[in-house]
Image (cartoon, rainbow, N blue to C red; front, side, top):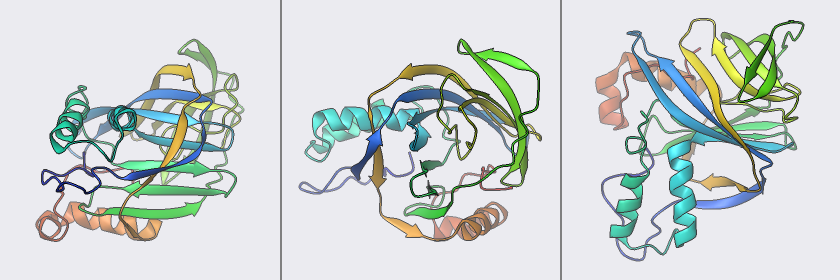
Amino acid sequence: MAQIYTAMPSKGMKLTYDQKPMGQASVECIYRYTRANAKKEKQSQRLIVQANNKQSKCYSLAEYKRDSVANLRGRNNMKVEDFKKLVFTYSNAAVGDQSCYNSREYRDTKKAELTSFVYEFGPRNIEYTTPLPTVRWNTAHKERVTICDYTCQKATGEFGGRKWTVWFTTDIPVSSGPWKLGDLPGLILRASDATGEHSFEAVSIRNAKSTIFWDVFTTQKTTAEKARQMSRDKHKNYEQHERGFGVIQPNYTLLEP
């Protein structure tokens, strides 16, 4: 995982990032995210969305599991060897996933903001905040499907330079979904873009009373447009970014319209 590195801190240093409570989740939904890269090769990873009526957080399920165990054990008081074991036990590879989703997305309707922590550039995470997007969804579709035992209706719209088809359920009245998607009168359980590059599918849903945490990283703050420019440049100039940033993943990301 991009925010953890081989060189471990010395005794007395914090072993993980801090966390600040944002609110309490009313629902947790696990998604299978599938991405096709420029060579049409597919990768997949499980994500979790923790959400309530005002806030949500979307990130790797493996990182969620690691954080949960770290909190139970006292995340900043663990021995280095115990922390190493924790990292590898709950890495994406250990749970059978690939590292193809490289951000944490925080939605806050009270502030009308969407904040992204992107860690494809390492060693420092990129952070940017945008106004909460308003998507002109077309919900006048008659089709219905059942996903995880919930009846879902279809919506189509454009967001992030892509045309999306999503399926949402009003039985879970939370205006959120995977990645940055939301702005509907119910939780989005399935989403795919018209190119077939990106898709999300809910595989498990549960009622929850867990805490939604804001993760406090060392970040380099920027703008959404600058982050997109950096992503495009990285994929065009691998060698330059290997010297400048250290982490290279030669697959296109959701930052790329």
